[in-house]
Picture 1 (tube, rainbow, N blue to C red):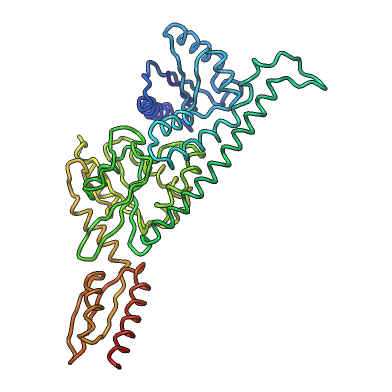
Picture 2: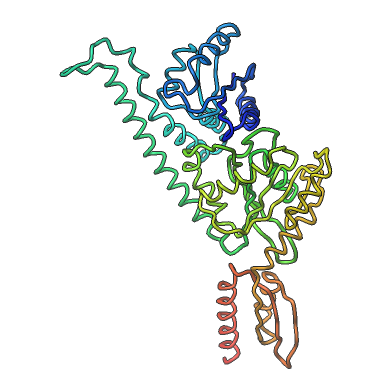
Length: 421
């Protein structure tokens, strides 16, 4: 059973219904069957139950009649509200954050993802430990007395805090190892796929980089671990393309914090491909959610290409015309059917080209090692012979320019010294 709150005009019923439809998709992803949806119109949240007492009684009756074993609230519940509701409904009560954490726990595959999810779960659980052990205490409270239930709560809190500290330390170590292993990538242009969950990022990754084998499924949060592959664009022009975790409305703060190391791929990217499910009726709101989440994790630039995906699923083709008019710099594709993928590659190449610098060198024709290296590692655009010397003009990405300049200087000096001998 799902429960939502609306408060017109700020939060109209139609919008809450859309949120609950997404919550139903989340519940399905977690393996739950949704039998009923309750919506209450209320100006202010009830401090004890979140919803009104009358609605609680109505839900109690339905839970008893239908044998409901879990009730999911779209809004975050305080520990007190969750406890009060569970006592009243006599079944498990969780909120949207708890459900998303459960899905992440199911989906996590790598050791890093599992640690990140466990950290988020523990930080979410910590303030909710109180009251879990009151059945152990048989003593009355008062000055000079302390029941064993309270002792157990403090013990659990200490254990949880210790585990949180250990996980944070391990994640820092993993992040440092990752930085060391990928230090060579800094010289290659980097592009990250971002977008709302289930927008088709992994499907697009697979069609752009066929060897990626990124897991894709019509489920929310199918991908948690970042996958990076080489994308060849033109001769000596390539980028590293990364598929990242999807975003969602009300993305739990604990998850954002825990997945900071994974989201570093987004922060370090030269530009982003924002994949949008254009077939979703609320795609523009989803775009805003993604943009807001990017700001929250520290993305301040506007080097973002909007990629409207799933155009093959559009029944009303006038939507596509409106999008093209409103977002003239965007590209419309179908990752499943491969529509306009070549156009997308050209646009990526154009953006990469903006960061290429022009260089020119003159070297002796016998310096074949340097000449061959430049042909292999840069885009040579011109070649002119000057007696026994050759003039090469070439383009190099700004990330590699310093490295290439140093190699040229070293090679020229070595060749000059050898010639002098």
